[in-house]
Length: 421
Image (cartoon, rainbow, N blue to C red; front, top):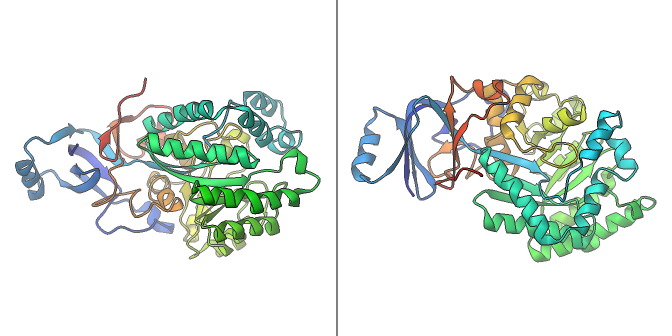
């Protein structure tokens, strides 16, 4: 269905020439069109401009039956791209939430068999159909919240069979929903208890059995490793990434969430699409990232939920880096995929401007998934993944009103998303 959105108060993040991402001071420079229209045809953005311009009249003459959506007082912007989630999981972990309230740390919970290992045990015993249905409800939820593209990781299997089960569920979600999905193999998420005394033996399993099986089945786009204190070392990470690259998987890395782990430098060395978390980032890491092509991706939802320090977003941008913000939707450290709330955390906790957080949850996260040519901005020829807000004063109101439902309409691939139940 072709659509014409008219009388838009402000059409945000417009481009005539596509760029891969926004970096440094450019993240605060927001291109927009006031009193605008947006034309969608064939599932793609076909044109945009000002209401009193000549192009609009030509479209309306040539398309008399065009479906029109009035947008007086509303903003229109690219749909969110969420480049870091673990939303395929079984059950929940609210009991650990209570442990956190009582003062136990993330690492303390993990050491006694909780955390990732708890989710792995639940997932291994959950039938694939049930896992799909649980995960489908989360995908439908984030779509209603305005997310049009999402990266989903495995990593709660921690065995070849269970990791493949997770990745098959991710593939089925891709096939049965209109959201664009990238799949990441994260077998190196943690060490199962049986391997705690000999972790390199688990690395052997990941490299020699899991990665070839994932590649043969064509189930993943990326490979990821949790390279941090208490998890995978730099040499272990390098071995896993090298095996992934050999099997056609593009690297990503969980890095520097808990300490200065060397994960950022390792990600840059292996040309990772993104390095994610980055709470511990200093001058050396920033210099390493500059002009590397690797997207620094911050996950403020995890810092908020766990009470951890926040990544130094302002310092990164002032050094000229791009910054992406993703939800880290998962049962243990960030049980929400609400990207509008992530925008609010970006402003409140990371001291980012509204214009900066908008770039961080659209074009920069699109780059972090390798989707920058088709997603993340309002540009002719890009996929028509679009949000229409409710009547709002302006962009700054979206992160300011952090608990309000301000999304009126979500359009994915040129199709209007039906309201949820």
